[in-house]
Image (cartoon, rainbow, N blue to C red; front, side, top):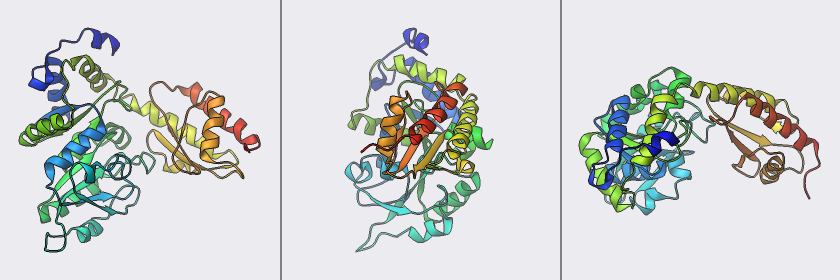
Length: 331
């Protein structure tokens, strides 16, 4: 990737003439079966642009209650698009189509109207769970009955592809737009992309500029994203295998609550139940043993496997957790 970045042919992407970005956008659109694509600095910006384009101020947007777009993107639904999120519960990220349909509202004197449904696959807060293709089909049918658009936060859509055997373009077939990231499992340093219909992407380009996301000679990072698309997808299976092994090892440690069967891709969530321990204290203790992880709640930890984690690292992380929880909790 560093070599591709150094050798990248560049232009001015704000004017639409960076050749490396053009190649990246064309390739991403083709892979997802959409007309066009727009390179953006981050997944959050990609999601924010999609919501802004598909909605009008005062609309209502249906989101899954634990979704990234609702919980972890600094309220851009309300701050930027000025829409009202309507959260719906799910089973590991898959919302009940009947429940979604009941949540849809028509605009009236006292209530906003629903214009968009947002999905997520794989689902971050559900531990990297893959939302089944059948659920996409069912949600699409609901959306079509009510004339709604569907946007997919597909930050890790290729993890869903590798884990399920369903091509990413099949998931994309049932939604109007998709955002996916190059900077997660695909291993590029920067960037995400938004794909959809040609007229949607034309307006998305204008909104990207409005949000300060227009970049100039950005081919220097788009080159790394191209390498990611061409070489990094199949190896995601290694991340999944290692996450499963990590989960199995952690589940055997007294003081950790974790069901390894829930780990489908590269994300492992678990709870610290050892007396006196909190998630932040565990994170700090693990750091002292050379293992980095995140506190995702008062007692919840999040670990992720990626291209820089090998089998030895997984075993080292398990051993570090064993050593930490054999210690007395910090005062």
